[in-house]
Image (tube, rainbow, N blue to C red; front, side):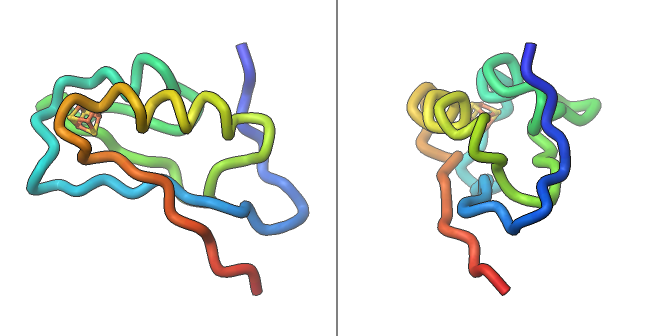
Length: 79
Ligand code: SF4
């Protein structure tokens, strides 16, 4: 299993959850536990700090499986 470690450079993308659209199915957290945890009600909590390069494929997969299109990748603004 990959472990998300802080990187020395800023991440190129970050995960964003539309909390209105999210139905809390939790599939994203199953596919990307390194970056997404679920709260007590099953709604995702995304780790801050962006998506490390080595987890981008997993992040894209998590976005693709969201049944209500509530999860998306947004390009990060590099400092
Ligand atoms: S897969 Fe989509 S609907 Fe399910 S918890 Fe994640 S963001 Fe919410």
